[in-house]
Length: 353
Image 1: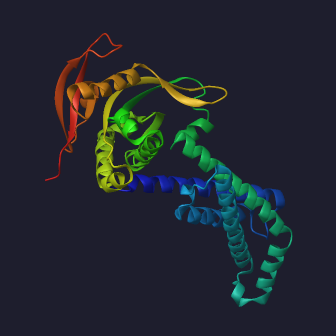
Image 2: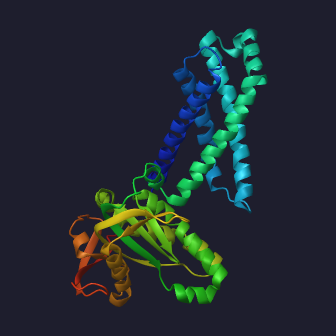
Image 3: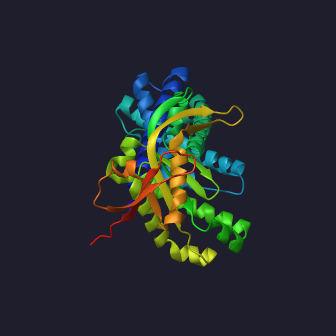
């Protein structure tokens, strides 16, 4: 399975880190003054790129995936690691800064080395410590919130995009683990919960690869959504099903060894207008209201009745043309909660020749 979705997520995260680092460096230099005679904008770029380089390097080692016994302990380790990175970045930034101003490299001049040492050992060193602590806290907070809300949601939340109800046209997919009740009885609650956790973790790459968003989780079921352009592009709303099936197949030996079973799933999808808004005071969440979600859930429920794994509405099927998939009309069906029958279409991936 391709990793382009994960790569795009990394690139977006790196650009966000670079922007935050430059902004933060500019504010610090504005408050305490540039370390040397560099203009404010130049000092912000020098230290911003240095700080961003430290953050991005640490993240590429997998720091964002660390999970220690408690989140508090994890946060301490992450913050200390970021602080070490920022101190190194500050040293690099000072070195570059002085080299630009003096037009000499440290190993070429004892005077330049002396200036660098004086800066690192005096007031700016203390300032960099405060900057390191604030920057580490900022990066940790942004990453934690972004991970909780999902890709792209944090930006919309910060700019108040959903503070008032907004109508959007979206595609929704309800994806559910098959035979979950039987598996829960067979494995017990703790092992079944671990299975669901791994099952959802393996869905990460297909979600990123197809530019999807997670609306919410319901037990062993996940509700996935796309804006219409993203969902229809390259048939992303269909490709996710195939990519996830491929992922579970490749992970079958691991599931078999760990749980004695290989999970499977079914899905239903529909599209249409919904209203998106932020609800809740004690616990805030962005939710979608509309008949589209109810219809998508009912379509998925028909998978058992029609003995198939992936059903979509005829309305959605009419918008997608892809040689990678073949469709099979399954007729009109009256779904619970709807007066008008809905045309259902079975989707199957075309195996490469």
